[in-house]
Length: 566
Image 1 (tube, rainbow, N blue to C red):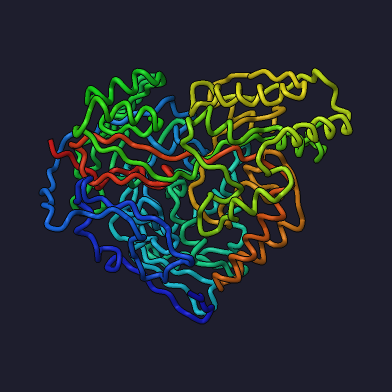
Image 2: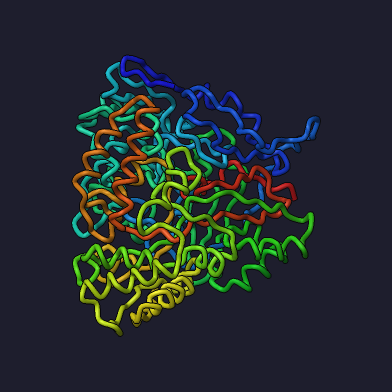
């Protein structure tokens, strides 16, 4: 498909509701849609990939039941409640049910489609013929939880906050809005976004609709509302209690603007850091949805729970990586970063840390539309499979860079989260093969993020998630000069220039080749050493209806369409 600048796109709630009957399907009929085509579908297409699961012909769809409480869990406390400044699921999971976005990814699809954005606070939108203006019509009679009416001014203030962070704040998605030139609010229910250059709608619309783009109240933003400690959204649930280290409690928003939603009376989100307790709670039915289980845990639960649950797997967008502080010796030396890549046995990392349940890859999700084939990645020096020859070269590179045997290296490490401590132990073992003495500095999540954003570290083995499998989003967030999550602080003018060029290219085939070349330029810089991409798993109690496992957890945590068949 070629997107022509002279085309005018229109999309509204009616198109989104065309398949609304699917929204109440139970898990047996919930399709996990793969991204199997060789080019993006047209903006009005929505086709299952080959091999996608579908409901059996004639399968009965149970009638929706209202009421009940969904029991969820996560493995730590939220460091803050500010969706705009954070990147961890410990914030996204509890805060998503409280807010809406301007538009959103269609929750029916496990693999989110770039052309699959549907209305949320916007009821429809139109793209100008020159591609430089997007006009959104907004839902009427929407209120924030404090009773303040929602208007176009709130959308404008939300995007401005992401573009221009408050003093002392970091906005991880700031770079994704670089092409925005101005915003207009002709009336309370109309929002106009204008661009300084063309941007593919297949990138810009998902950026606007990602789960992190919660719409905040302009009144709150202007009034210095403390989003680190408080919330005030338009979403389907209200947070009514938070007991640190124990649970967060949510009640149904009776004034929610979407008719008949949510189905549930409320949510209980338990803080359970210990894996054994997570598994026991799932087995006992005290937790309805477990997305923290590894494949081995999932298999163990299936043996004891049998048909009491559904066991879902999806290729995930989260990856394990190593970040360097290139403002400090010896990491600013490209030879040292190459050496670390050569000495890192990625195959062992997959085997040891994920029990084989992962895929090696580069800067774009492996096997995705945008990614370089793994065979080509392995031809880039530093990404070839681990070998004795590579290890020997790593030793020579370190010696040439003046790195002394026995150099002490501190690994900034998050406590208890996402296998982080084991990942750091693995990295320390790898570094030890060339005489580097690495030790973990284990700290709470909030402290780890603060130090990461302040670039206060030597090396950081990190589990990083991606909200969008899109080059504009990924490179603007992590790999461009000055990108908020370019923790290594590397700069490549060639990558920056090609990024701008591909972002403006509306022909998908031409853009794809540019994106591949951008990866070829960026990977040898070793801004991040990607060890592997993890798969996503969920064990879902059979009483839960309407659940779809997504390849990213960041855009699908609102739960307004779920119900309990208990």
